[in-house]
Image (cartoon, rainbow, N blue to C red; front, top):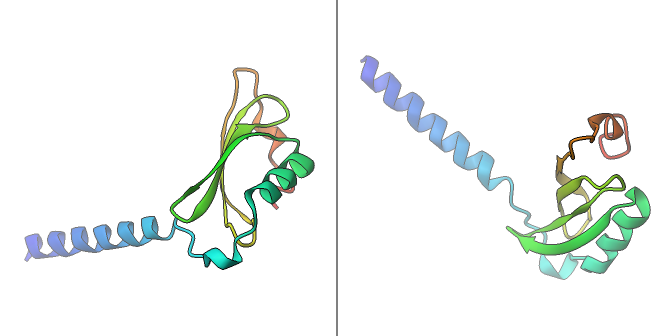
Length: 107
């Protein structure tokens, strides 16, 4: 009985993990996508980021660059709405997360 419960719990955990991973993909129809250059201009104007590249990964725009203080950033955007989906910041030794707390990025 106990092994059946453990097997069921493990299977449920795997299914939920797979669902969570699948949710990371963007599913916007390609016909609705905005140009990458529009995203580049938006983040440079709005946040002062320096964009190094924008590529497509799992149906999303994946942006890599530097913020205005030289911290490395990786961000994922929905290609149709250009809505921020994920943001990863690799702070330099003198970097400070307070620059992002309470900013329009998190509101």
